[in-house]
Image 1 (tube, rainbow, N blue to C red):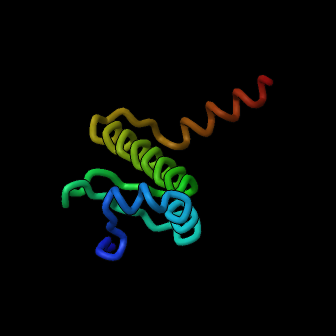
Image 2 (cartoon, rainbow, N blue to C red; image 1 turned 45 degrees about the vertical axis):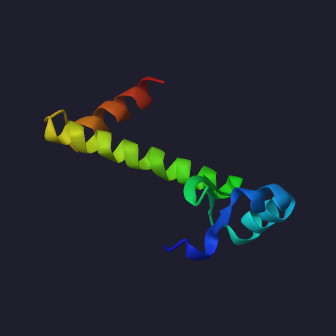
Length: 91
């Protein structure tokens, strides 16, 4: 995604904060804030931020799982299923 249309100077944010927040929530596109012509921050709506955090958490879980597979720390599915069934039967 290109952010050329989603770049504003900090002065714009200061003068139009309410409008910026409304637009962020409506369009769900991040806004790059510049200071002295240099990108300094990225603003995004809360729902998009939460989705990003959830995605990052899932990617982290996948990466940890891949590392366990590479290190050989895995169990056959049949063994795991048997262990889970025996726990359930004990309850």
